[in-house]
Image (cartoon, rainbow, N blue to C red; front, side):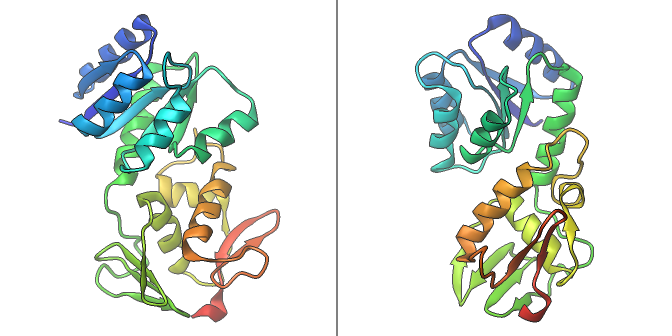
Length: 232
């Protein structure tokens, strides 16, 4: 039974969300403030966290950032803010996804299921589950889900790994943002494609890649991203 932690100061929202997730077969726990939610996320180790942005004590963005210091648990933010800058800020804080209030509980359950699927170890079809890929000092081992740059291990989130392995499977091929969402997220219908840009930036930083003179990942303006073919 997957477990979900709901962190929201509005009791009626917690009750509604709990009702739907319990019916969907989830083990549900709750917290009504940021401090309690942070402690529950770190100590109880739920499979996924639903985190309101506006919370008493620590706000949702701060809770998200602190969780990310030691955990890669999927986090979906619940927010009434709909400005693009706020969405980007949530992704920068480490959120995997966000849902704008008012939301459909059924859609939220669907997003959570998708987040859990994409957070599980996945091997892209076009890559062997046992054969590492070598790209000019970049070594990707799909079986171990391990990435090395110049023989140094690089710690990636599940999503960053899936983005990298998707592009590395076909060096030189341009992947549109929507296609990357489908391959690494499992769906693209509810997710803002521009969120890909945030994750690619984080991926580049971890790989030591320079967007202005890329060693591994190139931006194709107005289209998407690709792993350099000549890197292989």
